[in-house]
Length: 391
Image 1 (cartoon, rainbow, N blue to C red):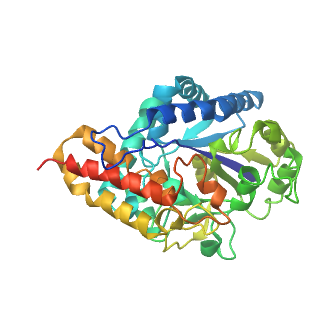
Image 2: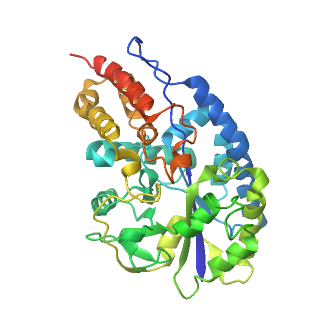
Image 3: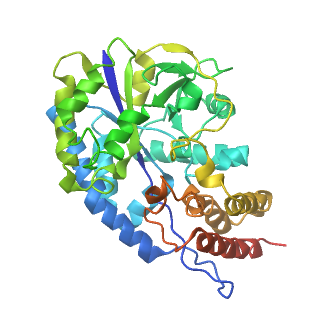
């Protein structure tokens, strides 16, 4: 049997307003732009896709199952700008066929710089999921699937049963993402790895008329899933939720594809759908997988160079976390909230200078004319944050 494990990332950053050295005050975030983008994506992706997922769950009598991570920042924006989206996720959660998993509340890279901050943000996210959906997350995903062995040990110590990350060729070697693995020096934690070839067929190649497999059909994709039988257990399809309707527009046929896929996958009776924790509970580990260096699902390199690949990014990240002790100890809740929103990984992604094969991805909803503009704007705001620290 091959089990399809759908996992969707749902995230919206609080984008920064233009902030010059002549500005003052703590109004750092562009509410007008954030509201407009949130509503745009809600109408094109979140609402129609949630309605379709709910229909598929009902149509297949609970046999269609999916998993999500909703960042704390996305939930905050849904509450402010799109409460109908949050209500639709609550309706999905009530079906019993949808699993919500944990991550850092602020979609940050805190693990690289401050373990205490990483743990605090993860616990805050866990509490939000429990409060909203009545679920205690058993599986963790770090921001943009960033991961290494050290992170696995911290995640296990926090009580998680599983972690999901990228099925990067540089760590898998001859092995396959269709199996589950165990991290070194962990007793119970299990790894689910993204099948990036099949995931990217949907997320990036689906509407490309120059792709040799175009047009993609649900029947064709289901046949690819079926080939996993005898060569693994899982087909881990991990992607941004905006794949549906935003990255791949409705006129590509992406919604029709999703509507037909569960029936085609389950038609033979040999394959099914599982949530991430159900996959971990059902299937055994197929050995230890050593990931000594940080990997991610970003760009062709599957490393962390999308956020830490140039001196601007390195400086900005260093400077924001250099304030950690003073901000965390000062007792100013509003300052702490602004500082944490500045940790969101998108701010550093906008500073990326890797504009070749991955250029279009980095331009998605990027409000800046250049990476340098992003860096200068960010550092101006960070100077304001610094000036607000008492003493």
